[in-house]
Amino acid sequence: MPISHSDAIKEAMAVNPTDQKIFYTIEFLNESFKDSEGNQTSVRIVQDHENLMAFLEDDAPLNAGEEVEFTALAFDLTLPEMTESAAPTLNLTIDNATSILEPYLREAVNYSSRTTLIYRPYLSGQLDKPHMDPVLELDIVSAAASASSITLTAQPSNLASRAFPRRKYTIKDFPALGN
Image 1 (spheres, rainbow, N blue to C red):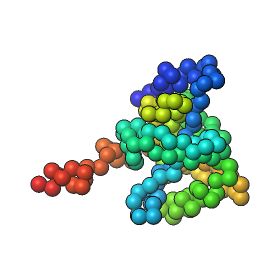
Image 2 (cartoon, one colour):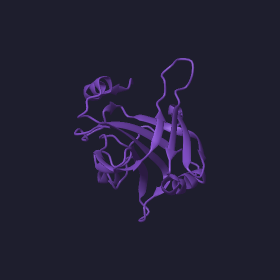
Image 3 (cartoon, rainbow, N blue to C red):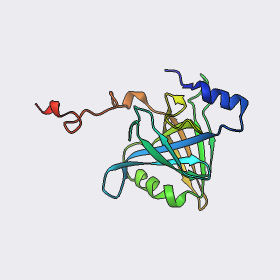
Image 4 (spheres, rainbow, N blue to C red):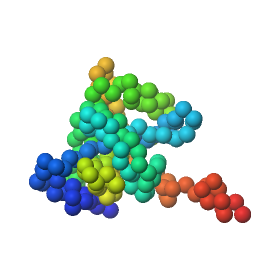
């Protein structure tokens, strides 16, 4: 399925209007990421100076369709080029993030499941959904941390090892399954 940006974000990228701001967001997911109550959680960041409240897509793996908070952090992002000769690679360097991300990354290293990175662009004033469909979902293939930054490389998932359908049908969510 080809990735498509919304017409609004295409215009913002081409014209760069002063009244429109593009928010680049990243979400990190791993089965080992838990909140204080032991529930599944993720780490969400936005390339900005202020935190961002925005809605996720309806088929997001966690908090689908809900408004969530992205924590403001400085990061440098190189989106993957789509070529036939090599696997697309996203490179991400996050500055001053060790206190926020390092505990999660340490936990993920000790856990056998993959860590997923989800890239979502948003437009100011239009935070009701990401302006990319589908969002870019990649697996982190390498990570390195220094005292001042974390550098990550991510590539497309191995689709053959992915669960299908992505949503898990449980008795809790679908009580009729228990009958």
